Image 1 (tube, rainbow, N blue to C red):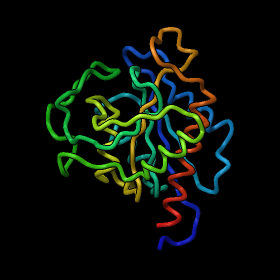
Image 2: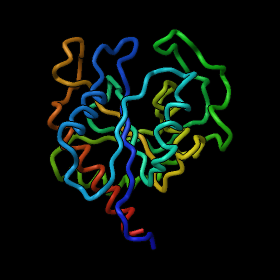
Image 3: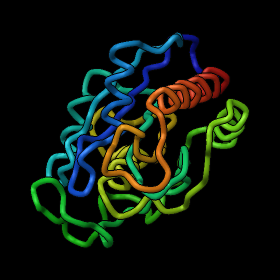
Image 4: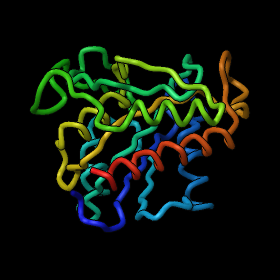
Length: 210
């Protein structure tokens, strides 16, 4: 049984990147800083720079003194139609594309560890709660080949100093309605925030009952 204390939660989003002049996950982090969660927890938020060479160091710096119990990572997938729950991280850079600095990683394993790593979030309960709240939700077994999959892999593999969460996972979200360049499915920031609160609450409940 986990000792009864406030869980430490790391919640990350990403900055803008090539092809995405607006990143909803950056806006989500801003919303959480302006109006903190009404959940009994210690929350640290961060907007990660889209850079292969520094991403592991960014995560390590965030976690060195914090050591989160739960790591929730959010990213943009322009084609998804709701909260996309990623089941699997793939420990490879084989499908990488250039980052914000134009850099490409070597097509090799991201870190030491297995070829695939499963999300340890309570995904079925998260889906149930999102659907009950009337929010769109979908599933995926491929987090892509960009920094989203890299962060998911590093977190799930406990590959960064201080980042050894009991629960780790990745959620993709669609563009915001305020993104004039977006086509297809989009989401209101209020719904993005509402869904994030639900996801955090489900994770905290599962952690507290473990």
